Image (cartoon, helix red, strand yellow):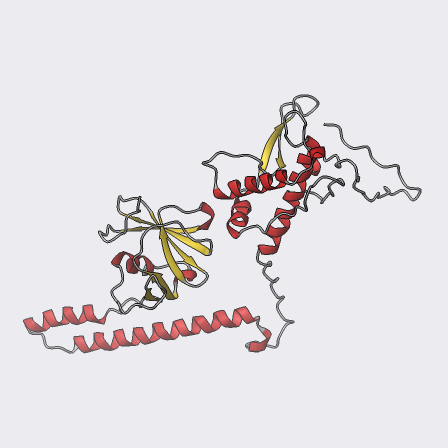
Length: 342
C-alpha cells in the first residue's frame, strides 16, 4: 500500500505540521497503518438518529486486555511481498460459539447499522460502504482503548531514592518509605511469633528430658516430643453462610472441600478474611463482579473454579475466563465436591 506523501519542508528546515480536518461530505480515507490512531468525524447525513457507543461492560474490557482485536494482513506484492502484519480492528460478525465479549461487539455493530441513512449503504447489497465501515471500526477501536485505559489501575509510584549519607548508626525511621516501614513492622510481628513458639518448644523439650528412665517414661517422652512440635498457623479466613434470600444462616458446618481449598498455603490475598457464600454452592455461571478465580482439581474429577467478588462473596462455576484464573490447586478427592448442573 503506498504511503501518504510528505508535506513540503518549511523554510526553517523542519517538516511543517498540517492539522487534519474531517470532510463533511465524505468519510476520511483511513490507511491500515492509521487505524486506531485518532478519532474521525462522520459526514453529515450519515445517521437517521444520533448514535453513540454504549458503556463497555467490565467483562468486555477484561477480554480486550488479554485478547486485543486484530486481523492479519499479508502483502501480495512489493518489497514486503509475503510478509504479514497485524492491524487493529473491531469484529462485525462472529459465530454463535464465539466468546461473549466478541458477541457483544457484533451487537454494537448491528445497532450502528440500524441508525445509518441510505447514503452510507450499498443500494444493491444493503451492506455498509467500505469507507463508512473503516471509519466505524477506527472510531470504536479508539473508544475501546480509551475505556480500557480509564479502567486500568494507575501505575505504581516510583521507588523513592535513598536519603543522603547519614552518620554511622541506624537511620531515622521517618527517612524510610512508608511501604518499607509497613514491611518491617510485619516482619517484626512474624519474628516475635516465631520466637514465642521456639521458647515454648525449648521449655517442653527440657521438661521431657527430666523424666525418669523407666519404660513408661520412654513412651511418655515420645508423646511429649510430638506435643511440643508447634502447630501450624490457623487458616486466615472466616466463612459465613448466607441464605438465598440474603439473610445470614445459623448453620456453622461448611463444606469440607471448601474449607480444604481455603486452608491451602499461598492462596491469593482476596481469599482471606471474612468470606461469605450462598448455600447451596452449585456450579453456575460467574457473575460480572468476580475479580479473581482459583482452579481446583480434586483427584481425577473435572476441575472446579472458585471465584470471589469485590464484596468478598464466593461462587463456583464449571468454567471460567482464562484471564481471571490466578492459581491452580491439586487437592485430594472429596465426595462432597458439587457437580455441575445440566
